[in-house]
Length: 254
Image (cartoon, rainbow, N blue to C red; front, side, top):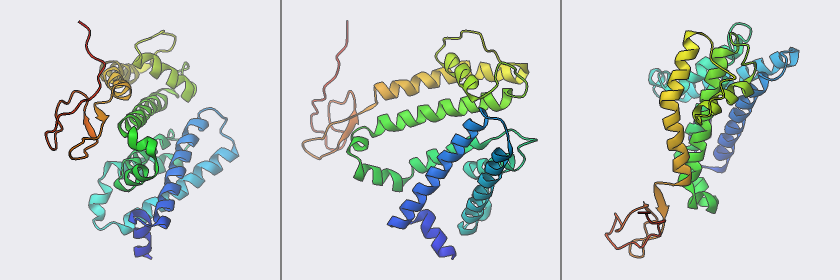
């Protein structure tokens, strides 16, 4: 049984790939539940869904721990600590705010795993041509999602201006884009400290992520000599074989 589980989580056959895509779909569903739960009243159906997700995540957590060779080291991994926090908040929805958004960390890790990247490069010509742009777009989405979720869970109980995830998203985007209408502000010392951190570090990171989408650091042009396909945008020679590269650029204005 343990070997079968290990193959499901780490194997390369079709069954293992389908299983991992199923886990990925469930994680995306968990994230969607976090967003929807901020928009709808918490009726009996909400608590049924909440505890059901917690049960599935607990089984997933137990299975990963069981097949791990070094259980102590496994429990110290940031993504595993995030799983524990998610499960605890789902099991106590009345007392703790829903932290299901942290599952996006595992989604990001899975999307960057060797098996998934290798399969995407093999099956998707679009991904192969635009891998850096796609990964940058995913990073940007995850960054905005995490900042918004953090604003929401820290402010929803104390800030009357932030009633749901959409309000938190509005504040996050206006802050990151330096629009700053000022109609929504953070409450309390921790809220203002978070706003300062978003303005100081978040804006710079946001601009950097946007830049990598529209102006990737790498360009795709196959070297005629060695076949290397990814090069720096300003490369004159192939870094692998030294052959002269004729990469088209936008030029510089003087």
